[in-house]
Image (cartoon, rainbow, N blue to C red):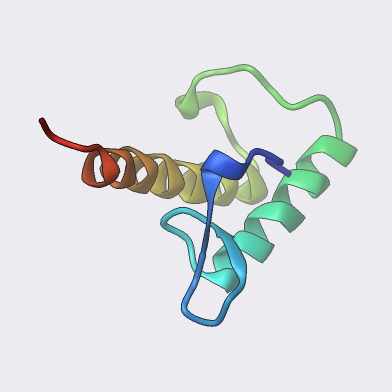
Length: 80
């Protein structure tokens, strides 16, 4: 799983979650990433070439996290 503090935040319950994802989604993301990595090298292919349901769900969660991370970064920047 991603082990980088700038990808995480604390949710209302005090759980460390990926920005933009719920605790359940963060746990699902971690489980899917481990499964994908165990079943073969993580593919560096276009989104259209991902076929397995696990890959598609992982990508959906990743996209959700990335979009929220960009929005979160914009909202936390200091304006001068």
